[in-house]
Length: 464
Image (cartoon, rainbow, N blue to C red):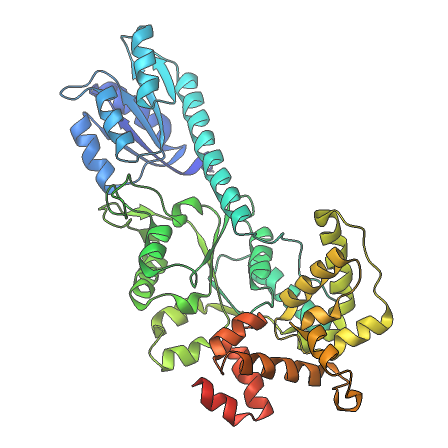
């Protein structure tokens, strides 16, 4: 029975060998072909440059002495154009000055010919490990800037949350594209993190992208990268988020806000599993799982012509809906306890006590901002040292103070307080629903639904 060959040690690594000696190229190709995802070779800098234009390489093994342009001069040009990959220089003739010149040109390693297989493999291993750490550090810094939440699971013991946890656990094991739906604040990014952390890709990066916060030009360059001079400022080229997410998960939040031209581009990427940086001829293979999320009804967006039907069906391989907090209020005590336990050490404040009466009071509220709104309430309350229910409504304390002379006319439950506050905010901004939603910390769609439920035609008319 024939033996099964072991899997490649670096399956995602693409390597380019540039050496004028055919025997050396052949030796290096055979050594690396079974260990790397893809290996190309060229006899000189000009041929190597043509390959660089069509492919993206994580590692370059480069001879210094080449016909025409030498290796160090070409390496300087590559660095000026934005090539950030690892470079191992090899040469049969070297002195201290050459080594210093090579390092200044941007080489990450330097090997003298003739070398043993173990020497070149160790150099490749070090180079690819440095490249991996650089990508991970970049992703972590970006996550810190965007305050990506911890993947601590979805808290709750209700039937709704247990069903959600079971669905995420099942889907995590496969590589299918997932569409997460639900209102703002229901924890879609947390669900995406749970999918990633429970998947075979857990050792790879998790890269979140909010499609609603970037301009169409910026998001295209962010996702796919760009060639030298293709971006504003005509600077060097750079990799896109698809490259940084290699081997992991790319989370596309608010996918409904993706511009139509980019929807077509994303559809091609999902079908071909290749990306092309802006202004480049490169076709870069990508091994990335896509998890998308939206608080819109994409079927309605398709019907209105704002979202491509073919992309919708491509994303909707598996669709998971996250329930609003008002649909599983029995989880509020667990969520409150969880947020107190996790936030108090971060804030450097002692935990606070929450009484049964206070929990019952929280259960009266409909939580238009969902779990995110509850978390923000607990964070503010920890800072103040006690549960700050009035923080649910901006200006509630002022409203209460003004109503003391007429106690019989004051609302006595949270539903009435919520309506009073939302309508007063709408009045204060002249019926501008977009501005009112920003002040309230909820989506415009949620605000419109609330006003429609209360039957406030005058306010709706003023905001149209």
